[in-house]
Image (cartoon, rainbow, N blue to C red):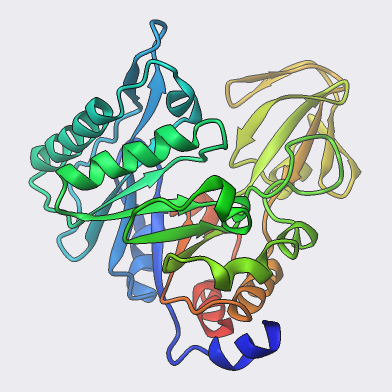
Length: 323
């Protein structure tokens, strides 16, 4: 399969560059706007809201986006993130959920006088939630005339016969969050060793695939070797400059005293494990993926100047060219 794909998977032209936008208020700053312009971005995938379970076990929207002024030069794709707990609910009415999600997407768009041509569903469904998720996708497809897409994880591609394939127009391969969030030296965001266990199966998947690639990072807050939580947008360079932290080894920083940082309380002896994706790793991902699939669009997660500052300005052009 690999040798066959080396010829078949050659790109005739570089893939387009798009971004996910995951903040709760839409407002492009100078850096973000310049990145869009420099990379001829035509489309933003904007998280409209999450769907979680209420205390009485009913689905409800969480963290709705305030769209504000969305540029008329960009196409907007509403993304709805559905927690797997929703699909695991034994009382779930998938038809009702599909109607409510479609209606709310319409409402949020209309409030900002936006038109859209696609809805994307983001849900890491499991074997236990599979049947509910597939039924939900079927119901959503019945009531919307929009293009329908869904995020797909590596394990859902390799084990497609078990996890099933959603009836959508295309999938987006989420090429990140591959490992376990823990105190080990391995990164949970990207690990080539793990990725290599799955990439050779990409050509067998029956859906057309775009690919989502990570440009985010975070700190894993550890206490006595156990995970306390995730601390977004924390970088090794910032901790190196902070007198409250001391480097233990690459990407691990110990808290030197009880203190408060950015609304988080740290105890002396706590550890922050920093995870991020380097420029070299992004190019490595592109080269590996290009061996097994043709990609017409890369969606980077996520558009935020705090992420963009960690890369050279031409990184997205470099990644495009590597496919």
